[in-house]
Length: 330
Image (cartoon, rainbow, N blue to C red; front, side, top):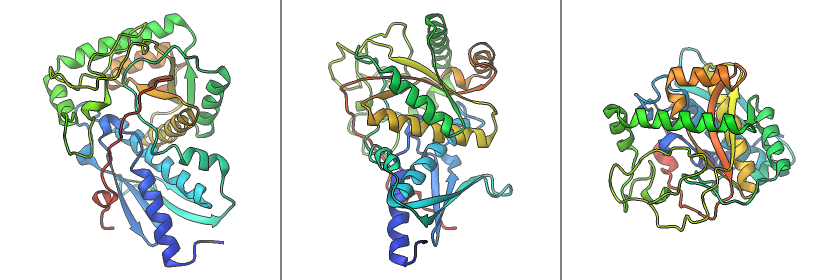
């Protein structure tokens, strides 16, 4: 049975769009827009929010949009509808990434409900983790979630490989910090304390004086010399956590969208079990470093995300633009 009344359609679409807005995105750029035509949602890339220097090809933008697509799918399943999704449906409209319709009514999926409930709770972490262990069985579950979406999540077990990933992340951060154009681009998405903006990285979203993990994974510098950051006690947050790399076999626009969907499914499952994630994309924004990782550590697959997973007691406040700001006429 399909959605029948206009009221049902409106309610379902509104819920799905609201869920989409809470997807993670690079620097919280929220690089998406939506169109609605009856019971069809069109997901589009918003090129005005693309990082034109750090993400010239739009890879991170499409990964972000893939995460938004996953949220729409989960919302529909949680409401009891089978999502009908077409990815990159029109070659003549490259900004149109997907169309989604609520299909046949089906029993509400318990797993989807669980993940859907985490959508607004999930937060990006930008520091170390506590020493509390991540259960191996949970790690296996996260690997299975990524695999179910057509991507591969590989926990990095080798200490040597972890050191390589940490070192290459620090090297990329050091190089990028010397690039004036890249630094100015980052400044655009760094929010000072008290800012009313509903996008970008808030000053409360990272510690003022973060402790170094062992080995150390460099974080982005959103402060630019200002005394910004939260005052949370980071005394126990010195663990690197579980290091993992998300890869895909190909590196097309469709692969990037797939990576985004897999990433968000992993993040929500992790959040449901008390885990947070920290992202490190600096090396993946430099072709030669990304290619080195692909050949030396990723079994020839394309690295789409480097992350750390662990337990933290910090709960930041998320900021998102209202849905009305993201709607476009079709």
